[in-house]
Amino acid sequence: MSSALERGLRILELMVGHPGGMPVSGIASALDMPVSGVHRQLKELARLGYVRQAREQGDYLLSVKLSALGLGFLGRSGVTDIAQPILDRLAAASTELIRLSVIDGDRLVWVAVAQGATGGLRYDPGREQGVSLHLASTAGGQAWLASMSDENAIALISRQGLTPTGYESGPGAPASLTALLAALSEARANGYALTINSYMIGMAAMAVPVRFGNAGPVVGCLSIAGPSVRLDKARVTSLAPVLAEAAAELSAAADASQFFSRLGHEYGGISDQPPAQPPAKSARSQ
Image 1 (cartoon, rainbow, N blue to C red):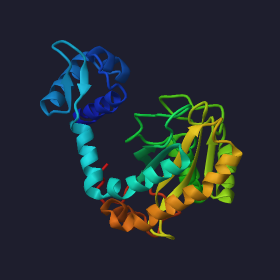
Image 2 (image 1 turned 30 degrees about the horizontal axis):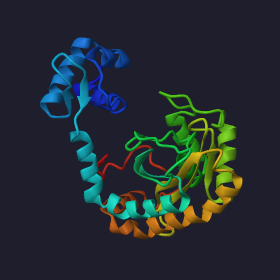
Image 3 (image 1 turned 60 degrees about the vertical axis):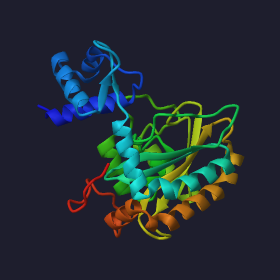
């Protein structure tokens, strides 16, 4: 039986994907929980300021408290101060969507974004900050997996799964472990991971790892994403050095961030071996 804390967190995680709010019955159905139990949890979350009711007897919505806590953490840790100007410059240079993800234990989580496309076809995810990447089907995930040995990559995939849960990946996603390992080998040879119609049909993305210092452990990944009709082979080739330069700039600036410094020390010496869980001595902030 799950604890009250776990049930409350499951409700919050579900509501992140429904900014317009959800009825108690809808939450209960989605999480396979009793309506009465969900109602009690929501009343407690509302008392603590994490959710609010749109109107009496109406749907429940997330308040801004949870996002404010996350933004406050990123701001005080130096992630946004250091990363955002670099992401904005890369977005302007590439005229595509730029995303930064960071390692959190055995997960990779999107934390910052910059949009460079100003017209025409563009990819606007909108809701991905704070979301864990599916490693096998995303460019960022494959870039991280390619930075380690096949054995360690397989260990991570075995925990998360080759196929995502909660949504359907595109036809370009690796359908087998053999296909994934071939994609990782190609990423190592090219210096970047490339996915087409994988995370989402009609979208392409390329990504590289971000290290703590030039030769330090991987602490995150930087990616360029956009419509696959625009990110063709020639354009991907031309953007590769621009992406690598931005990642190197982030790596060089990482020691100025408390957050990246913590990751650098946490994963120092084990850059080829992602931990099954964060080391006991390190408090997880995300």
